Amino acid sequence: MKFLKQLLFLFILISITNCSEDTVDFLGVGIITGRVVEADNFNPIENAKIVLTPTNNTVFTDVDGYFRYVEVEIGDYSVSATKDEFLTNFQPATVTRGLEINVVFELLNETSGNKPPTAPVLIAPEDNSTNIDLAVELIWSASDPDTDELTYKIRVKNSVNNDILLVEDILDTTYVVSNLTLGTKYFWEVSATDNINDEVWSSTSSFETLETTGNRFLFVKQESGNNVIYSSDESGNEIALTSNTQNSWRPRKNLTTNTIAFLSIENFETQLFTMNPDGSNIFKVTTVSLDGFKQSELDFSWSSNGSKLIYPHFDKLYEINEDGSGLRLVYQTPDGSFISECDWSSDENTIALKTNDSNGYAISIYTIDINGNIITTILTGVNGAAGGLNLSVDGKMLLYTYDVSEFESSAYRQLNNKMFIYYFDTNTTLDISEDKISGTNDLDPRFSPNEAEIIFVNTSNDDISQKNIFTQRVNRDSNNTTNFFDRSELFNNAIMPDWE
Image (cartoon, rainbow, N blue to C red):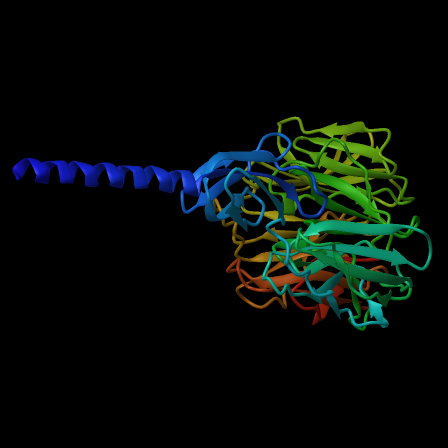
């Protein structure tokens, strides 16, 4: 009986085994092949990752985008194709015994479906605006539905010629265009791109710059951390002549050539430039830079006919033609003192100089002839700061400033800076700052064109307060005694005046 039970168990086991083998033969296997291409142009995608689910078997496409699975058990599968910079795609696959099924993937770029930005809207200046400064801030707005970072491009044309200003790769929605010309109509437009879709352009807007003016005042204001040169008429109608993206200062106009010379930075050096009265046609004059003590203290001078300029370079005084040619050494200080300021007489026979040490002190003010011989010493052997040289048109007076407190510090702070006139015919000096408010400094004085007034800067001696430009009248009585009075504020928050 026991033997019969064992025989029955063996029979059942063999039957089960035979059934299992019959099942495998019945299900069978098949083959999955396919190709992965780009949806836009059907170029093959090499090394795309192909995953078969639910088995998770993985293969990669060849150089032509093909892949292949062999001996895949019959049944339903999901096949995925993945590649960097493309969207993953899934395809169903039903494997039939002994057959080959082909699957094709057309992968979309991962940016597919990304929407372009809106067309920029031009905000300022308003369309058809007039009397716009020669340095104008263009302002616009734009948005992107996918919040992509936008890059902008500006295109500016004018009504005079075919010149086109194209500025690319702007990340902000503002941009300052400078060196425009007076009385000119400009057309501008802005494009936006998300660097995925094609750029989108705004509509075109226009503006017209100020008409030609006879502005006689020049001065400097600080904007965005830079010095900006302005011109103005007596009514206070100001025009920015240089951009607030560039540091420019110390304007000096020559009436003969109707050209403005000024200082500006190029490659970390102070160079001398010229421009038209409207801020156009900027030209670099110097190759040997202006150097010495403190850039803001450096000054230069035109020749009366505007053909030449003189300027300091440490202990040397150079002469150069307006077109940048003819550089010539005029004078070198015998003791190595730095030349900070200079002024050239109208007859071009006399040059006034202010020299100092590397800290701005040990000052001397004197005149030399065109051969470098010292003629007259006005100030020397004193403590404190000095500056602001300006010769009268007849060469008989020299205007300058001196800190009578004789204070000296590493910060070059001045406590009681006054204006003085030196009379060459009598070798006498006149204090013309008697009406100055206590605790303030008078700086950068210049004679008015008719020498009936002085234009200058006044500010608190705390060295941080606002600086304003004033004028002061000159009165000569019957005894030819000169008196200065009636101070009047002319320009607010401005420095370095010039009045021609």
